[in-house]
Length: 480
Image (cartoon, rainbow, N blue to C red):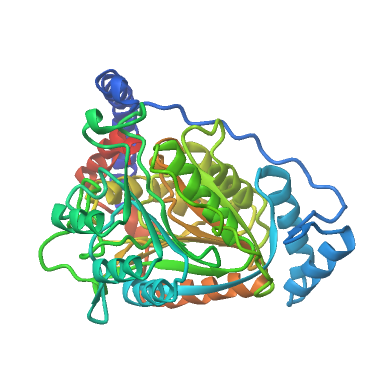
């Protein structure tokens, strides 16, 4: 058996070389075909982080930058376990060094698990609206929560004098019922279609591949909800990334995660929404009450990352790479679509080799079978380096979360793939502190217990034709 395995491995190496050549040709052809659509953007090369200094990182409060002593006090309060304080300070210092947006103190966060719980929280927040409701979603449909429909709720709030403004991605919401959108417009709700599929309807020039993948709800400038949950009636995407999932699918079959936020950092999400509204030339909005005085609501220190292809260096990409490269104890990643860049692969395998406990929770089933094949093509290298991989069955995993060293966490709309780096507009929130990280670690542990571990020996025994199919799938990984 060992001789046979060696021969197969040798044949596989030859096939890999041939596949690389074929892939290069295919990618070249794809770039030519898609050049007019902006299909072959370049991945940025992110330099390794430099060692941080001994000074405490600066944190911004609601009245501006905190003093070094104030920042130190907050960080000491966030680190609860032995060793957490030092880890927390180092991760916060790196975060401060690489990002353009401020760390903001005084926030309260609440983890929302799956579609039904998220929809209940969203509907509750919108029902409490007194001034405005701002929604920005890749998929925007007339979802239902506890017998209430989104359309009815938004129209009722508009009739009560609340301003309602919606940005939806034209491609992602391609299956949204026209009658639903028309009904909202007739009620006086402002709608902006992001980068219309029909270029004749666009008010701005754009590349077709540049999509708005964000999921943002802001109510009265005081409460926000972000994450992976789309406003989709089937609560999923179909294989080509648009709304309208397979017949018979339900919300309960989908595993996802959102974050409810209250406090000063909500203003950063509000600014992202308004920036997109302005860029897409939406109607003039009254912003006079959109930034109320934000009183501290909790102890969470957070940062909003609004990534966009117009950034020379996507904020989320450099942040994720830095957190992985500087991890000291553990990395726990949950992602719906795992098509890592070369630098992400190098960072994950290097972390595992230096003794970091690296764990990936990935879907066994997906609305994008191609993304599963691409992920499988990476398993051997990951497992060989010591990365632990778990596949979740029976549900379709759609979450996008990461926890590092038990003190640093991130959650949002970005997948661990090329598209989230080079094409999509995304939104993610980084939270430093043990409390939020512990919530996500507990969720990871719950999901891991229900998942199947992937073992290297069994993985190597897969038929060669399966491996060849997976290698071929890598031809399309840049488009995932």
